[in-house]
Image 1: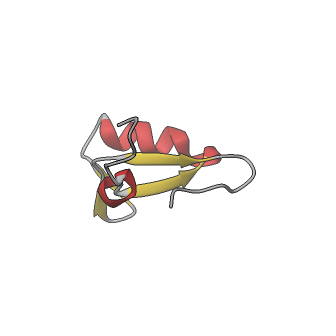
Image 2: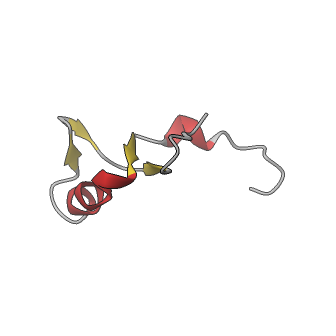
Length: 53
């Protein structure tokens, strides 16, 4: 991980703004569906809009 050999952006199913974190947790604790797609790895976009990749 520390070497940067793995592209974690490729395994992220959803990228949510901070305001939707609760929805992400609910999906992972329930039916694993978010926005009509299967949720398996959720990233949270920070308050300033910095995203993954």
